[in-house]
Image 1: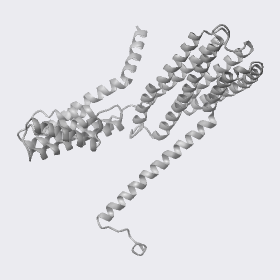
Image 2: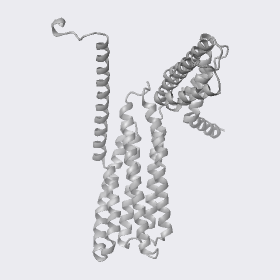
Image 3: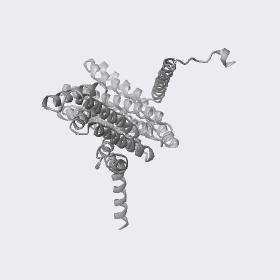
Image 4: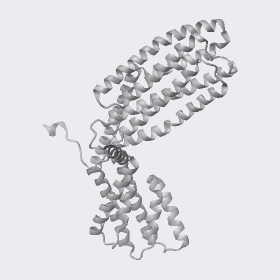
Length: 413
């Protein structure tokens, strides 16, 4: 019975942490609250626009909710203004309906409401079809503001979870899949490799390359959850650490795909009847691939670890894996050089395999990562400084438009 309760509790926790489930629950509660508020403030007997707006704007992160709220309110206001303008000139007919739809879609595109561009036309049509145009129009605007405000306030008061853990799990899973592929390649080095088997590894590497899109989507959601979230104090640093980590893993995955391409070409040259590499090279080369796979997993753990002590342990493991990999790499390089001297035609494929492994080791190096983090932090700081400078210039222009002047030194004295 205790095991049953334990499994049920863990399943419930996974269910609650699922982004889709969290979105459904938050959107439902926000829609109910917005309807309760709209009933008290709106003149409509059934103000369903408010819960509809809350349902549309509430997202799994505060940042995405704010963006959706602004676009939704903007689209409704633009649609209402267009409907009022058309009603003053023409009535409702088939051709005026077509004109208002076309005008709403065009204006919605220019005001950049993005996914709510159809909402401009919908608002204009609904307002144009009512009898009490002015009252109905501004009631719709009021309900939209209520729904957007309640949805935004709900996400600020009850801050959504930070989806960093979900993105971290995706990044670590990608690294473990890459490591497993390298281990499978290492096991096949010591025996004859048919072309079909080598091509299967190439297709697996391509699938691994395609999985980066899913990891990138999870990371974008995590980045949005860190913006404007009161639970997070160092959102910028966390975003940069995760993004640069995924960029490095993406480069390594691409290099693995190129590596499997080289091994497939080598298998074609061997005709599947002999080993891909000489017997004295297969063991150290397989060991080298194992160390590279271990370094990939250690790197993923390093970039997704939030606790400093665990991060130090992950960094030590990564440094140990890289050191061991470079030591084995030197042995492999000497062995391959000797065989290339005996078989000069093999130098291109042997050299490409070694160069691809070197590229992964260089990307995973701690010095390279530190330099990349500093560059991204500097770039983010410069971007923030430029935004603040633009805001300062804009404030200065507003003061000039109002006829104000900055106090001179004499006035200050």
